[in-house]
Structure formats: C-alpha cells, structure tokens
Image (cartoon, rainbow, N blue to C red):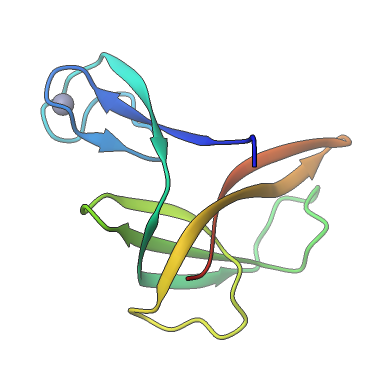
Length: 112
Ligand SMILES: [Zn+2]
C-alpha cells in the first residue's frame, strides 16, 4: 500500500495527534511535522453515523476511536461487521469517501 496517513507531531513536545489540531493539545505548540500513523491497537469505542453529507454513497459510516500500541488515540473508519470494545485491530489506508469522482483516502481499521 503506497498510501499513508500522517498525523501531526509537535516539534516542541513530540506529542502526535490525529486528526491534526491547530495547536498541540499537550503544550499549545503551533509547529508540527508529519508523523506516519499505523500499527495495531484496541477499539476504545465505536459508533455508526447515519447523518452523512449528501455526496456519500453509503448508508452509514462506522467510526471508531482506537488506542494504538504506544498510547496514541486515533479516529478512523472501522471495517468490521462484528465490532467489539477492546477488540484488536490494525490500521490500513483506504478510500473513506469519493467526492466529485475524486477518492479521499483516510485511516481505516480492520480486525487484527
Ligand atoms: Zn506539543
């Protein structure tokens, strides 16, 4: 897979956040460098979102917050028909939506 998802690593304190914030949630720093997001972790929580923008062509999105090994918490799309809290998943990168024929890539989770 050539696509990758990058979070933002604070150049002041080293904290990584994904999705990115305008200021570092830890130290309020405003300078970042890209940090690749990936690996395995556990599902902390998930939800099915039905209220989607009109250009989505799916009925709902299953979103999860996953705590990666190492402690970083990330939000992404959960591709699992039998989701469970605490289940181990691994990150992958895929098309999370298409808009005007253009694919938008984002973070996804699949069972580990
Ligand atoms: Zn910081």
